[in-house]
Image (cartoon, rainbow, N blue to C red; front, side, top):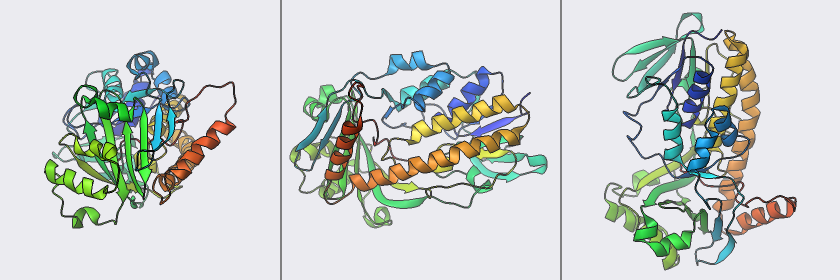
Length: 395
C-alpha cells in the first residue's frame, strides 16, 4: 500500500530523485515545478558526487551506469592559489569523486520519469493544511490541488517550509557572483589551462575566485560584503560591461592572470547573496508534510554538500515510504530522525568551509585543511584531496 497522492514541490535534483525511486516501486507522485520547461534557466556548474550520498542515490534510482557515461574525466583535479597566482596545491588526480555537469545530471533524472510525472509551469503561490492531515497547493495561475503527502523540495525560499517552521534563511556575509566562460578551451585556452580540468580556488583578502574547469569554466567571484551591498552598489547587473567593471574593481590588486577570468567572462552575470538556515534547523512533526534538500537545511556552498544531501534525503524518504506503505507518519518520523543530525553536521562543515575560504590570511587555512586530510588518509587508498569543501553553484 502507498499514500493516495504525493505532491513534490520543486523539480531540482532532490525532488526528481524522490519521484524516480517512487516510480520504480509503483508509487505515483507528481513533481510541481515553477519553470516552464527543463531548459528554462541555467542550472549551474559541475557537481562532485559523493559515494555515500549522490552516488548512492543514483544507484538506488537505477541510473548509475548512465551517470558514469556522463562523468567528466579529470574533474577531480584541484588547484589552490593566492591572489598573486602562487600555487599552493596542484593535484592532478585521478581517483577523486566523479564530477558531472549539473544540467546533464538533472536532464538524466528528468528523462527517467514517465511522461506527465512533472507538471511544468506550476509555481506555488500558497500552501495550507486541510482536513485529515492533507494539504492544498494553490498555483500562481489560479488552479489548486489537494494531496495526502506534501514534500517541499522547493529550495532556499521554500513555500512549504512555512507549514513546519518559522525559520528564514539569513545572509552569511558573502556575495557570490555567478559567471561562466563558454567554450573556454577554444576561445580562451590560456584561461582553461590556468584553471585546469577540475576545481580551482584562488583565495586572498576575504575574497575568492572559485571555478570548475572543463569545456566551459563555471566561475564564482565571491567576497565579504554588507547585507545591503547589492542594493547600495549601484551596479546594473543586466549591463555586462558595467558589471564586469565593478567586479574587476572588487579584485584590484589581484594578478592579471586571475582577473582575466572576470574580464573575459560571458555576458550573463548573476549576483547571489549566500544565505543559510540555522545550523541544526528542525521542526516538530506535522501530519502529511516534510522537506528535503535546501528547503530543509539550506547551507553555504563551501563544503560541496548541498546537491548530495538533497539526493540522499530523497533516497531515504523514498525508502521509508516504500517500507511503511500507508503509514505516512511512521515513515516521516523515521526520515526526520535520520535527516536532522546528518544535515546539522553538514551545515557546520559548510560554515567552517566558508571561514577557511574567506579569511585575511587565505588560502593558509584551506591548504592546512587539505594537508591534514592527506596526512590522515590510509596510504593504500587513492583519493583526491578535493574530497570535501568543493564550491558548487551558489543559490
